[in-house]
View 1 (cartoon, each protein chain N blue to C red):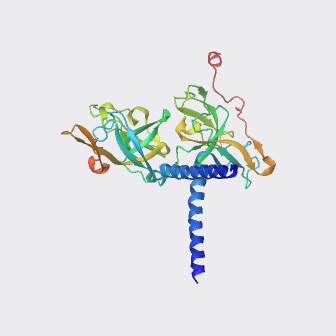
View 2: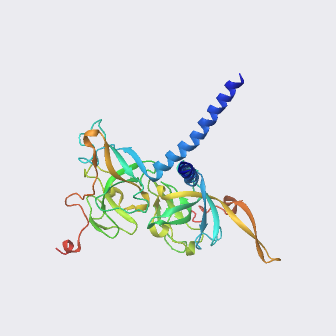
View 3: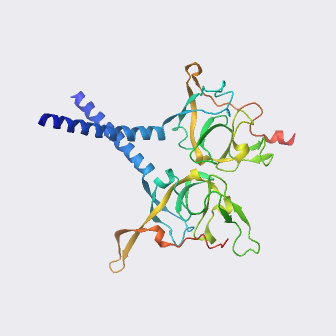
Length: 178
Length: 177
């Protein structure tokens, strides 16, 4: 009797460990859902949007200019930031605002990326804290989950549709015109 | 004939199920708990690789203790290099956020370590790519804390945090003097 209970408990623990490890591998190497908050990426990603960020590009070092990435904040490793990659290592980026008379440029150092939010007026990004190391990037945002609100029945139908995030916006690298 | 095919299928099933248990468990253990790494180079002499040459130390990196990014001054840690995201470097923590550091060869002589960053240095000054070249490092790059030297057997030891002499954060009293 005791042996049966012990056997069942050990089996349960074994299955929990196995599925926990598979879940860890899925979240770490495939992708995860992230809830974004804040106005710095409007109109692409608005407050409380749910996005799916995939991890494979980051591990294979295939993040490109124009990608939206989730990264660890350089000033607080427990906080994540969601911004767009404007420059990779070696690129020349413009650090002055469009209203300045004299434009200043800087080169992104080796192993770093330059991030900026889409809502330039309301975003703290590399323009304030400089380029961040590539290894702080956690994943690339590839899909956004959109919800459909049924206005006649005044209830939120969870009609979840995935829209490809790249098609939503135009690339911003030619805004500064350098 | 029928017995052979069922035996083959049973073997394949056992192999696949074993594979799906062993690989995720190993990957999770290496990512979350412990990691084994070989120290290469002379930047931490004489603590690691005192003889140099072909004999490299192998260390055990504790990844569980840094899951909340808690480190002490004097710890030996491994971080992802800010210059090359595919390389990991192993150095000693000299200063934490808010400390004032007197640098050796950095562009500013005195540096205040910003929030969420720390200052790392190799024990062998001059032969080390560390914060004296690339500045304070973000804590998000922390990979693991070296807890034991496990090879060669003659150098089995637990690594305890200790700051080298004259390398540490400046007290405010020292600055006034």
